[in-house]
Amino acid sequence: MDRIQTLRVFVRVAELKSFTQAAQSLGLPKASVSLQVQQLENDLRTRLLQRTTRQVQLTRDGTSFYERAKDLVADVDDLQSMFQAAPADISGRIRVDMPSRVARLIIIPRLGEFTARFPNVHIELGSVDRQVDLIHEGYDCVIRGGLLKDSNLIARKLGNVRSINVASAAYLKRFGTPRTVRDLDHHYLIHYVPVFGGTSDAFEYLDGDQPRTVKMRSSLTVNNGDAYVAACEAGLGIIQTPLSSLKESLRKGQLVEILPRARMAPSPVYLLYPHRRNLPRRVKMFMDWLEAVMHDSGAFGLR
Image 1 (spheres, rainbow, N blue to C red):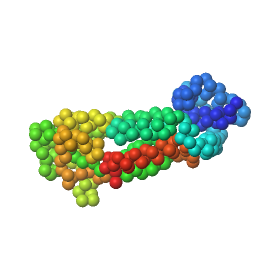
Image 2: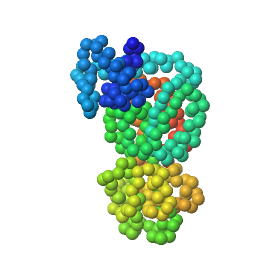
Image 3: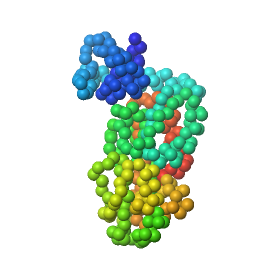
Image 4: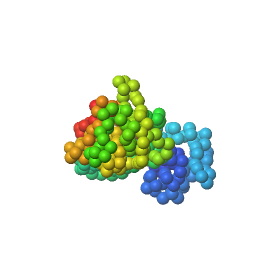
């Protein structure tokens, strides 16, 4: 039995709390995953996981063993990559998630640079515009904006997003151009949320150094960055979104900036990854590449 592989399987089951999800993430049959964990428990002569029909939980012994096992697996992965100097020697899967417009406008157009340099790395790129669970969904890293909530993740700050207020020319012709925030009483706001429910249809802006909000009417809420911009171009209301994602629409005159002195506060953008002592070399290389691409492109007004 490959003991390192068995430890890797156990760690994945412990992290995902599911034999099925662990098997899917590792590309193994569920029966093989279950058998390896059972054999590990037999060898150790202790129960590591408490199994029920609904969930899998670590026992007290399992928790202690997991803390040591995950470090050992990380050390082995790092050791195996020490002498992978040539890009062709670096291989494996990388699962990453990012906002849809970051993927479409910034990362995907240049992704060929990375895949050409590292031909044996397979990338799974998600752009679902929601807060994915890095651990339970098996992601190696994600690009996210806004305040951080999960202290179990390591954050590499990329910069700050500068957003502007825009509306379509057709919308402004119909409803007029607001000159001050007081004029927003007569306008509509398109609301964007990663997950539907509990929205607050408010226009955000800085009054000096103080953040303020203005309650506005809204007839549409979307959960996708592309739909957000498309709805604005269709004349359905005002949006507040990063400048660089709108450059083409602004150049063509499809969208017009409004209230330039009432912009929302810049929002931080982070590259997040699980709290691991050692990351696989392929993931380190990919994250460095992501950071360079974001900065090279002037992505979303990063500064």
